Picture 1 (spheres, rainbow, N blue to C red):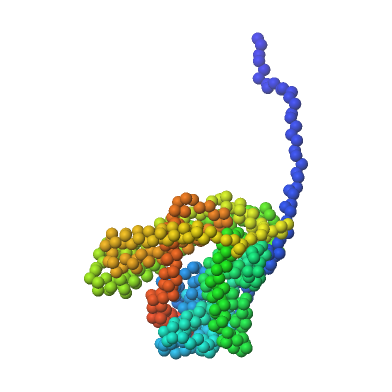
Picture 2 (cartoon, helix red, strand yellow; picture 1 turned 45 degrees about the vertical axis):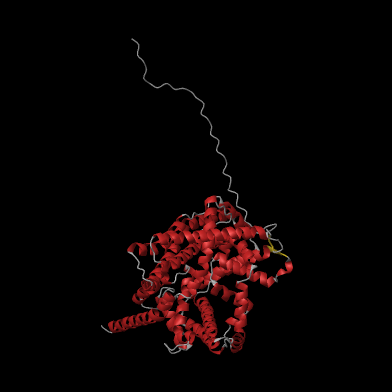
Length: 575
């Protein structure tokens, strides 16, 4: 009997050998030499970090409850006189100045003139209560700085002679001059309370790069100073969408540096030359040559925005910042991250802008109906039905919504263009790009005339179509013209918002549908721009709030804060 073995059979096999590759140390990335522009930019940017981390001796503080109430009121103000987010704080300073100097500004005696010593501290505290400065971020010594600035501007307003003109024109000239001076004063006050180191650093970077790379034909057309100023203006308009007062103030610092000094000699010189200074600044702002520089700046501003975002993230010691951006691999990754982060937030920011601008126009429409349209329609024997009133108020909001909803962020291939441009700005190059601006090039006047005619016709067709909609809705004829103008202003606001959607775009590729829409929207927006500028200048509803509501409200907030402090003192006495 045979038995089978259950023991496993051993098979002799050759064991394969595994070769382990030697560990090769990762090759270090070769750092790039930073450009002169980048070195100066990081140096200026660092000043912001140092300022924000400074120790504040004897800081000012306000009551939290009063701050919450004042902050809620500021939200209402945003709707009434809508401004860009970076202009809100300065707008608040300007309102306070106008309110405090109302008798000087309008030639009436609602308030006694206050001297600078009485104005400075209440102004700072009101700004803090409104949420524009945090508790403990402003030192008491800054009160004296603001007092000196106010003293200077009050003296200039008192001593400056308005050029003689017919009575009505003289009053208007006086109003315009006082308003301009208070706008400049608000810019200087904001700069003292919140120095814009990083914003100015980025503006200087953009201005210097474009200035060094730009060539104009013929070269004798303008001086180097004129070219620098026009590039600076274009950079401010494209990069931060600054308005005329802050641009004017920054140009004043270049052309007339004595303007911001506070000694007797400088104040006397400003008082003597202030009207000439203002005329020169207005010429700079309205220069026809500036349009070509604006077009150039608008093409490349996306690269500088992303650079600003990168520095915002890695803000640290100058050595760390420079080493980081000198690493081409690391820089490329940070550009991508900053690009997609800004792209993701773009739609939300555009929508918020649309909401505020639409609400502003909506509130203005209600005010217009109550104050003007309703009474005039009754006098003309016409009444608003509920439907016509609904259409009257709805159409502008609906158009704004439709115009904003079709805005699309840039395509992803734009990122490579941005990365390449940033590398050319921050890293030393063997050769730099040259931006040629040709003023000698002759335009085809006949072709331009044809384009202008087509654009005008399309604009009038668009206006007629809007007018026709109001007519179908049986809106009284007394209001149809006002409503049509209101829609044109909405088109202007929407076009401004659309321009913001290109904030990270260098290569702009429009499609055919956008081209057709712009045929009608651009000429309507131009009409709306003119009316919008007039509205800002004569915003009766905003003026009403400034003169009638601001003063008692700010007084009430002050009383609440004093009352709260009184209660706290009494509570602390209880043991």
